[in-house]
Length: 318
Image 1 (spheres, helix red, strand yellow):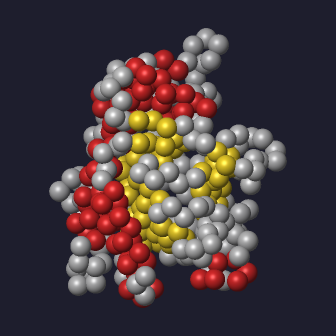
Image 2 (image 1 turned 90 degrees about the horizontal axis):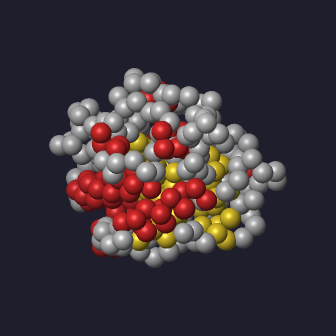
């Protein structure tokens, strides 16, 4: 680790759309990460989300394993995922639970798995409320990205990215070193990786741990801490958006260090519909900068790309 990074801020309350799009473009080109402020998600709701997360992850392993992940929904126990085999050869010492769209919004049926109302009486309603709010924020950010990329504001809607969006909400828990195997004390909470989708919207409880490497090709890698900014969400670009923009927007390498106290966060992975065609935007290429060799991702191939089992441990698509 080589210092702290001052992430740029994107203020959704700004009335100057052009200036706002310019600031977002600069953040996505230079960092691939930014703080999102005045986003409209109430602090009271965020605190209810974390309160429910703490209670869920505090349940017995036996109770949590009743919700073991199926169809990309449900509980992932400690070490069940491996984002980077060099960082964490055993798997990542974190646990999480995945939720898709609430039942009344989901085109795939009722796939979410919830603890019983008797155990956590209000968590389902809280998480569904938060899902809807973050989905709304994500759509605003993506439409602003379209403006920043010199295409129509509703471009991503027109190409079917939101029909429906493949958005997964993921509460995470990173236990302190004392709660995991003593041999794992030098591991990372989450190994170095890039996200695979369009954007990720993250909220944390303020416990440090997130680090980014802005130049993933540099050797040795330089890692910088991302400080918590009260009231802000953290947004980062994923591989899919990097691909869409011909590598103009950066999908930045990041990781989570071993926390000194229990750390909680909630990530929304905001991805396009599986039937959306992803290809380099015309505004992002020209004769001197042709579409990159990663090529076009045709209709029907997106789902396999988003769920590619690269560096994952015990990954099963059930």
